[in-house]
Length: 327
Length: 281
Image 1: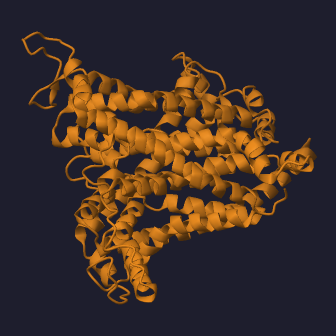
Image 2 (image 1 turned 60 degrees about the vertical axis):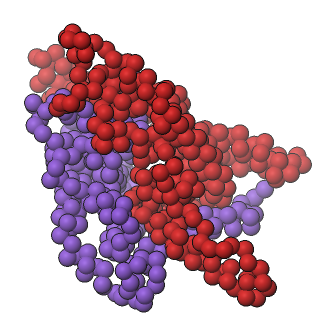
Image 3 (image 1 turned 180 degrees about the vertical axis):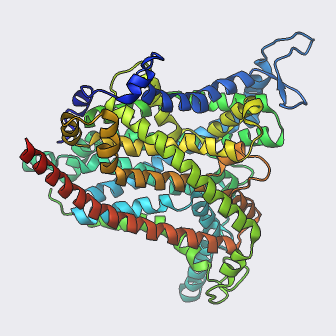
């Protein structure tokens, strides 16, 4: 492979030419500058904002612009307020129920994505080369079309007078007319339920599960399975004893790609879910925009991040491992 | 166990593709429905909703704005993403590398509500410097989260890049910066193009982060779509969706055909260059 020693060879290449001499006076080497540009962009616009969230989550709500302050209610100049914003998360069932519900919905959706996606990725990886590329393109294509429009599409399918109910009622009418079997009395309400939220999340995030699984299964050494079969192992047993354990990194990567963003999902529960399908992303947006309670919105954000620290670390570890493996 | 697939797996794959494409097909079909009620078929109309869409100033203006934001932010993000991907592959050790790779990877999965909220708070703090929220803050936000996607694309391209050409150029006396612009960048150009397109699409599609970071007067297309969809189904949205799906399908197919042929050409060029270098030495 061309990249076997990319890293070691790359480190031998000097990093920059005229920039080096230009910046030598400033004590900066070209290499440092190259790293510094994206580094400081991300530091300023991605990392530091989290610290501000943490900072605002410890403030008092005031009617002002911006609507938070660290001034003490009794007139002091500086106080930290943790009890109010964070306390609310524990006391008001609205918050902790939405929080737990989000974790549950994200976890269940991840499992469903895995159950649907695994056989799919497995089948794709076992296809011929040319078929594989076409199937891969078909998986990626919906990802390039608008996410919002794909969620919108489900409204038309799931509504009471939507396509699925129309089809079900037509089948039911036909069954009633022919063999007298009446299964449903009217349309099944699916919109504005938790079911619709699950459908939306599984639908939107399924490609994120399939792609890492496929990348992993595609690289798998088939001869291992052949060896197992030669030694008398049944195909199904070989699948669970060899294929599944070997694809574990793909399972982890796919699961993290689905679980982490799904926890904070806002658009899907907002459009497909009903008032009962409370998810924490929705609570955050409502606190921030409708109630203008910034400290609580920030405390909610910190709480979501706390739940995601471990999954994020697993995901990061996986990304680094992939990089090492390739290099 | 050979390459033969069990029929169970094949049926499963067909079912999954049906699941993935049924909603998209239904949206396209109902954009040609001659009825105000999106889910009731009222006969075929080729253009009723497309004309209505064209006459909807709000949607057209928002679409123009979104295209502008997507083009500008994806271009900036591509520049930063190329550098970030290059740094991740070529500089294996530097102070803060773990933090850097974490900051590149995290925006890919970070729930948008959190990214949006945190950036808004930053922009409010920076208000004395950058002014109120508007086009600039939206672009900064879009650059920040699309740059991660582009960095990942560039990273995997740089990983599989054959170093011998760069080394050859350097041996022949080219300065490192010249090597980068004359040798490295042209080789990875297809990846840059697909990275830019990916960034463009993601920026064009973003709702949540935009909602946090924009000001009055910069209403983007997803925001208009979202507010309309909230009120119920709208055949104009079906027409808009069909246009987007059409452009994307054609674009992706073109990109794949082009990338395949340019990949072949690139390999031939590389071989010829290697032969030429070998002949010189």
